Structure formats: C-alpha cells, structure tokens
Length: 304
Image (cartoon, rainbow, N blue to C red; front, top):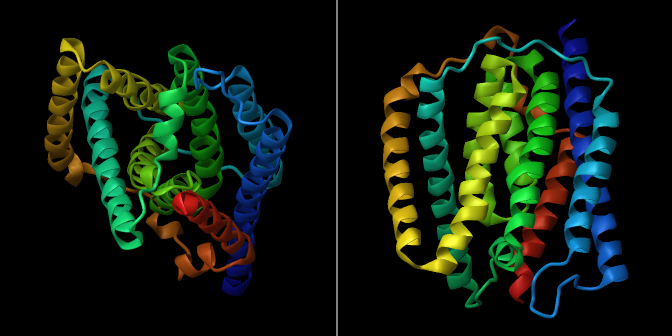
C-alpha cells in the first residue's frame, strides 16, 4: 500500500510540474510570437504600448494559466482552514509583508551585484526597466490589480488546494517555491518566496482567497507602482513616502520576530515519507526546474 501511495504522490507532483512547464512554454511562445509580429511595442518616447500590456495579460493570464489549470484539474481538491482575519491582524500582516518584500529585494540585489562583480558586466534590471517605461495607470491596472488576482487564484487557491492533502507545511513551501522560481530572475525570486510563504500561510489558515488578493494588491501597488514614481519624483512627497516605508520595514521586522513563534502548521501526519524526493525528483518537476533555469540564465546573460 505504501508503494502504491508513493507512486500516486510522485505522479501528482509530476503532473503539477508538467502543468507549470506548459504554462512557461505557452507564455514564451506567445510573447515571442507577439514580439516578432509587433516589434518592441514602445512609443517614440520609450513608453510601452497598449499592445505590450495586452500581450502580457493574454499570454500569461488568459491563455497559459488556464492551460495549466486544465492539466491540474484532475487532481483532488482538499479543504483549508476557516479562520477570519480581523482589522488588527491585517494591520500586523501588511508591515510584515513589506518587510519580507524589502528583505528579499535586498537579497536579490546582493546576488545581482555578486554576478556583476564576477562577470565584470553591468546586468540591466529588466523589471526596473519595464516599470520605468510603464504608464502609471497601466501599471496600476496590470501590475497592481490584475497580476495579484490571477496569481493568487492560481498559486494559492489552485495549487495549495491540490497540495494541502500532504499537510499545510508542504503545501505552503512548495507553492511558495514555485511562485518564486516562475518569476525567472534574481531580482524577484527571494522576495517572491518570502511573500509566497506569507500568502500561502494566510490561505491555508483562512481558506479565503480574497484576503491574499487584497494584501497582494496592496504590496504590488506599494512596491511596483508607487515606489518607481517616488524614485522619479525625488521631492518632499517622495521623501515622506520613503520615510514611511522605512518605518513599515522596521515595524514589519519587529512584528515578524514577535509573531514568528505563533506560526503553526497542521496536517504533519499527512506528510509522505521522503516527500522531497517524491515532490521534486520526477519528470514533471525536473522539466519545470529546467525551464526556470533557462529563464534565469536568459535574464542574467542579457548583458552579454
């Protein structure tokens, strides 16, 4: 019976890996095809055109994610918790997430600097370049709202819903790892993992995706929309904003340390023996890791 369960677990994780590989492949093919069709998709002033945003939304969220969902659909769904988040808990979670975002961003910048030092090349920050070329309202709509909604529905509701059968700890860790790697660059991978752990924990305890969507939207607007504007402005309001964010980071660090001992995962008895081998050493997940390695390599080698 144990051998049968082990084989079933391996096939489930392999299916997840192949679904993620499909999502990456479909996104790449559609975006590369659009690049060949439309060119750079920038205005004469250097801003991204509406075609760029349409390609991003359609390729990744309207086509690739639903394709992956069709592959994952046969896997059984499991129940999550049903706790509620009151206003006080929200006020604790937001600074913690801001702290995780900036700590992860700092880690990514350190790795970036190490690669530049070793290679003696200045590697362009692709994400920073995209945000600097983006219209404020387009960034707000796409990066601030649309991306968090689709990502939470897929990486938390869909993935954790299928992974929670192995216990909350495995579900949260694996979904966070996948969420971080699929970003495909060192700039985002560390803070995406930290935020993925936070969002995953909130979802397994509450079962309400609206909570993680709201928090994700808030974090993306602060980090991906307001921060680039403040960096360009450099005025009094920008200074006030960065002082506010510095205070949020410090408060988040204190709250994280204070509340870390309260983190409890249930369902440990569901964890398969030798689960890491079953989860990661299978054809599907290896294909996914290989695709992510290619994305990281392409991003890192963009300066060469």
